[in-house]
Every structure is written in structure tokens, then in C-alpha cells.
Image 1 (tube, one colour):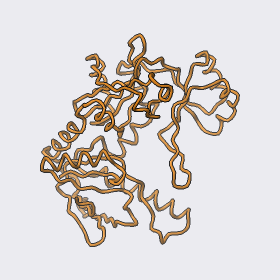
Image 2 (cartoon, helix red, strand yellow; image 1 turned 180 degrees about the horizontal axis):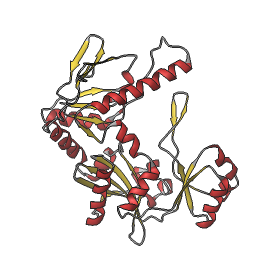
Image 3 (cartoon, helix red, strand yellow; image 1 turned 45 degrees about the vertical axis):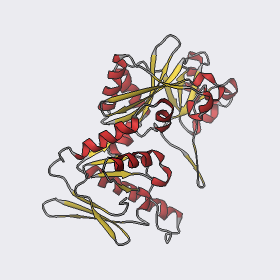
Amino acid sequence: MILIITDRQRDGHAECVITKLRDRGTNPVVFDYGWFPAQAQLSLSCTAQGRARFMVRTGQDTIDLTDINVVWLRRPTAPVAHTDIQDDRMRRAIQIDCRNFLYDLCDALPCLWVPGSPTVVSRTQHKVAQLQLASALGFEVPPTLITNCPADFLEFYRQHNGHIVSKTAVVSAFQLLDSTLSRYTEVVSKRDVGYAHSIRYCPMLFQAYVPKRVELRITVVGQQVFAAEIHSQQTNHTRHDWRRYDLAETPHYPHVLPPEVTQRCLRLVQALGLCYGAIDMVVTPDDRYVFLEINPSGQYLWIEQLTGLPITDALCDLLIAGTHASKPQGHHVVSLAGGLL
């Protein structure tokens, strides 16, 4: 049995995979962290012999998922406290407790996780560790500084003759009311340097600017590697960060990786404890491959639509293969409610 953890209403990737899985005769179960605790009740019991049992109920429905073999951790929403809880500090505390408990529960599931369990996924998003591992595997990486020290920033700026970019230091988003504000990669301008003192308020990531011929989005699914060229330099809108998306003016094509780069990508994903990863790289004008980062839950659907690379099929293959794998012994019996499709 396949469990997909996501907010289905906002996840077109999951919808595409669900449709293909159904076409293959597989009917997955969907659950979202955001249902808990306001819309779902979860219980954990443990026998004197240490055998645990998890139950989640939504309304009158309880679904036994003891046969779960594989979980696809996509993009769930965060737990939401019940509306009866009005105090803001209490709501935040409850939601943190619920998140931690859900992570505990998920880590106990004896099955294949795609891309990895919540704990593994959280750990793999640390950018310094990514760069260190990528470098150890033979990737070229850009010189990097993460700091909230204005003096160190100014020294790094001088070292690279002002040719640096800035990014957020961690995987995060600023919450403003009900909206999420994200920050793109930006070239550091001379005007920015005049505000160097403001760095002390929050750490930022700075990297030496890497000249681009094309950018690559490399999607690793199990043992398959799909590389796509993003011609971000064709338009000023995407020149410094293709995530600004100007798809009408930004050509996308399949890319043939050198065999050694393909093998490094596979080793990187494996070394991080993942079986899926979206890797961002730059191909420089002199054809060097420079690693930027890996996202364990990175999007891929637009790449598939523009290039024809069969990434969804590969994901379905991986999930279905997981249903035939032997389950680890000595783990918990798990039951989950709600979300049966």
C-alpha cells in the first residue's frame, strides 16, 4: 500500500502521480499533517513488549494501514490547532508539539520513504552540509560565506571584487499574515554594501558569482537521473534566479550529463539517505559543472512538461516497487485514518 503525505488541494505533482498510479491499478491513501489535531485524532499505544500501535481517526473513519510499504512525503501543510484554542502562544505550542509527534510517528513507520523520512529530509536541507558533501564527492562548489557579521561580509565582497550573490541562509520563508514571502537569489550591488550593518539582524548566505552558460535541474529518482537545461540567460527576468519563471522566453531541453557527473549525482542522493532529489547546477561558459544545492522535495512537473522527460513515470515505478519490497521486521503496526481515495 502507498501513502502520500501532502496537501492534495495545492499539489499538482501529487495529483499527476495519483492519476498514473490508479491507471496502473494502485489506489494510494492520502494524509496531510494539517488535518492534525483539529480534524484528525491520533492515538499511540505500546505493549509491555514494546510493540506500538498507531491510530488516526477522522470523523467515523479509521483505516488500518498495517500493509503500508512505501510513503511519498511530498508537501504537507503544518499541523493546525483547533479553533477552540484562542490564545496565540498556546496555539503555537500545540502546533509544535503536534509536528514533533507526527515526526516521531513517521520515523517509526517500517517502510520505504520517498525521498526520505521527515527527520532525514530536514537534515538534508542544511546548505553547508550539502556543499561539504558535494565537494567531498568531487563536485566543484562556489566559495560561500554564511554570516551575520558585517565585517566578514565586506571582506568576502572585497575578496571576490564585488562579484557575489546573496541568498537566505536556511530553507525558510517569512510568514506575513496568511501569505508566504520567499526570497530569490540576488546579485549584491554597491548600494547593498551601504547597508552592510543590517546583516547583523539575520544571517545571510553569500556566494561568489558563477558565470552561467545554462543552468541544470537534475532530478534523481531511485537509480534514474533526468537532467534538463534551463536557458536562464536568455531573459533578464531569470538571469540570476530561474525560479522567477519566464517560461515563454526561457528554453528548456534535455541535457546529457557526463558519466562522472551522473555518478556523482547518484552518490550524493544516496549519501544523504534519500531516494529522490532535485539538484541545481550551473554549466559555465567554459563547460565546468558547478553544484549549487539539492532539494529533497524539489518540483519537477514543469520540467517534464517542457522537455518530455518521464519523471512522473519513474516516480510511479519507484513507489510501486516499494510495495513489493520486504517490510523491516520488529517495527510498529501502523493504522491511519482519513484520506482514502
